Image (cartoon, rainbow, N blue to C red):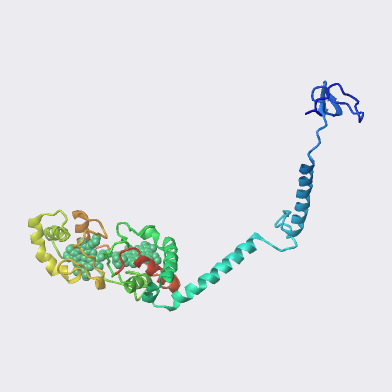
Length: 299
Ligand code: HEC
Ligand code: HEC
């Protein structure tokens, strides 16, 4: 402060002009009476500035820096961000290959007994599911009309690990795969008259305790025993080996309205699930089976 307050001390020691108000030395430049004060940068600032220049020169030599037309200067260290990503990926792949190899060789049941391996397989199965299955079954596997919910314990084709695995490998009614799961509910529109269809519909509703017309359901009982029980079971409990869904639970592949049920009896839909055995590698399919089995309904 003392140094700054040196009014009218022009031409002091160094012979340079000082500003009246601040007492600061001026550069001698003046515009309309306004004088430019000579305030040099602090030393520490200047040295930091020079250091950053030196640093940047070193950086330009060592690392990729100057953009060129298609590329950039390479830098003598040969480092690249792509190379680093590749290194990381290679390291991750190494770590994974150990797990992958064990999933490939062990039977499903044994993988399931090994918590660490199961966690790895389930994570892989979850991402493969999002890519290949979610468009039909939903990203949370809760399904849509005609596409079964895979979270519940009601299985059309069976819910053991092996059943699920077989369904994924071979698909359902998938043309072009000889091993595909297949069964066809006949179109009863040709065999039963309208009253019989209506009565059987009420009987089907009664099996799951859904609202129904009891008198009509009683009429439908014998039609069901004669025509339907062979596949769906005497009590409508379903038959996984025939892909015949249980009718005695309130879980429906199609809709639960009398219209939808009557439509299925008259002209069944014969849903198709693609076979994945020739599209995905065996390890991924195992991971998918473990993932689906682990969703909650696995048997
Ligand atoms: C194009 C649609 C579609 C895609 C994609 C699809 N599914 Fe399906 N999935 C179906 C249909 C339809 C059914 C029911 C078939 C039937 O009527 O029996 C089904 C049935 C299943 C079943 C049997 C369910 C049960 O209750 O028994 C499993 C398990 C299954 N899918 C898993 C998968 C997996 C895992 C994938 C991915 C790799 C997948 N699905 C991809 C349409 C699809
Ligand atoms: C040859 C075996 C077979 C016979 C016989 C059969 N079904 Fe089916 N049923 C199936 C199969 C397989 C499905 C599953 C899916 C499809 O069509 O995609 C099914 C599905 C259904 C569904 C839909 C279930 C849901 O969850 O949405 C209803 C309802 C049904 N059947 C009722 C009947 C009735 C009533 C009869 C007798 C008049 C009958 N079925 C006879 C095999 C059979």
